[in-house]
Image (cartoon, rainbow over the protein chains, first blue to last red):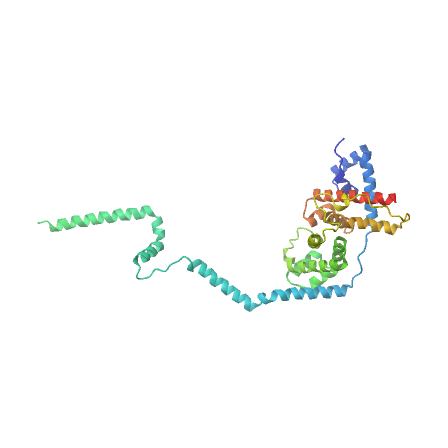
Length: 162
Length: 190
């Protein structure tokens, strides 16, 4: 006999099972007297529960809604001190300043005129894109060496007696 | 034509006060009864259901419309009630609902109650006992029973409210019903 469909019995009684599952449970119930008995007890229990739903103490709904409105207002009031336009604008400005300092201020040293190394580093930093194209820079260096060599040759030629 | 709950909720998201008040009027009774069915205290039920409306007011914009409004709102109510019960467990460890949700409930672990010396119990008393037994179920089992019996939600809707699978809801209901059947048997023996 197949496994007892214990957890399917409530959905079965409520007509929630898809046809194939319903068919499977029904076949099992035909063959299994224990599950049949369980189903009968369950049907009785669900009926008793539905018939005997307890009701909570009555409520004055107008008062209930008035209380709700008060609570809602109180919640809004609690939030309002920082959600007002002026504090919000101040907070936004402060956040902007902090963001600016974080991005541009921290870890960035402004080179001074008396520190040529720092000034050069800053200049290199600005031309970082060029350094990334290292092959081009290397060729420029070689070209510079060629130009120096050629100017030396020109100097020699100029100094030679005609 | 009356606007649907879903349409009203969309208007609440745009801070429409009239839409909010209409939704409150439609759901105040259900929210209060549902909360009371879980926490069993009228004052707590009142506070928790009002808190649910405040949450609705604050987060109406997050209602995506994938489920029915009622299911979405019941989830808010049930979650608040379950949280409330969870918090109360810390200072009320002797309470009957201190059961592990995953395991057997408090009721399931108890021996059969002592037989009432009074043989003739009225039907009203029997029903009271039955619902008292519902009160002693583990919180999620109780919520599943209440949503099924009182709100007549289908298993898949209960799963949406409790944010779990349908299979888990079936297990909750199966365990709850087993515990309640034991109670009924004991009542019949009296």
